[in-house]
Length: 59
Image (cartoon, rainbow, N blue to C red; front, side, top):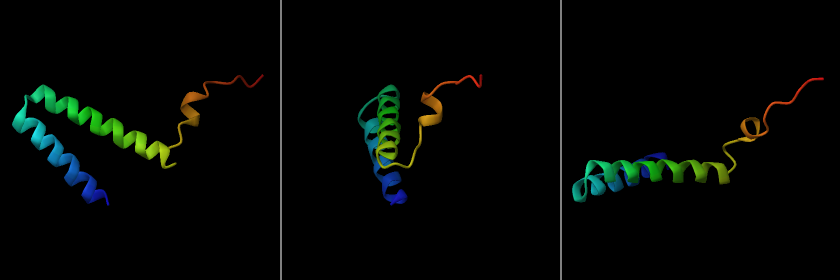
């Protein structure tokens, strides 16, 4: 499954570079990474609770 995701992202970035500029390719790469992170979060493979709870005092 990971290889398939890599191939799809590689194809998308290749098309973005072939038919656009380098800046447009970076935008596509940014959104691909963002989509990957969101899908991992909703699949339950990423736990963000320690980062969003903040610090708690021990007093």
